[in-house]
Image (cartoon, rainbow, N blue to C red; front, top):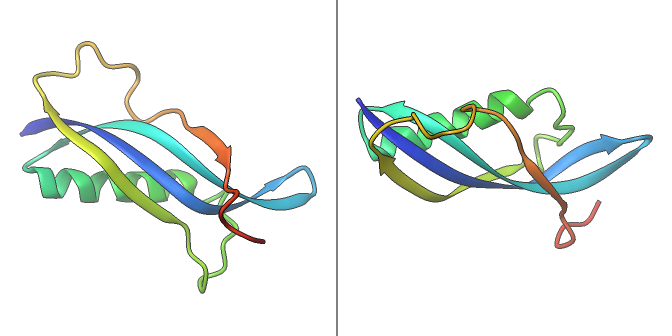
Length: 97
């Protein structure tokens, strides 16, 4: 199996901060082992959807979006930080709540 470094961006995440629901986006990196590039992208999106399922308060008519910005095949995971952790969140100014 090949190893991939995936840079992803999420948008339109409705998240409760204190008592208010606000829209946020994020950037994150995930490391995926997969049979090919296409499958690695699908696995990364599924992983992120599962990780964020509990905090996303989106209505089904207005779902969040995850986009793969970059997917690079790498030799090994030796120099990688803990796979599957961390998000850099930003206020999604382009969206309205």
